[in-house]
Image (tube, rainbow, N blue to C red):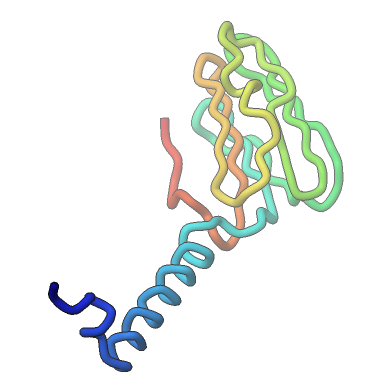
Length: 126
């Protein structure tokens, strides 16, 4: 039988394999993960309604065509606590805790975006 493939590899080949593996790990950990959020932007009807940092707990009531949407903020995270929309998709998303995370309550025209250095998205529009 022929020689095994490992016998054909030389020390330089092993160095290239190790460097490639290290690059893949770095890319996975550093480039594909969003950073910690530092603020929140709340939009109503396509316009900025409120901007806040995520350092202290607070509640924001946002008026929309269907009624009030309640946004809850705690240190490092935010969520849509209640919304008058029929399907409650934005409420079911729960706590958002990474930069670039978005909750959109389309029927009530309200959106919540977490901001930070490592945003997943460049912009948001609906």
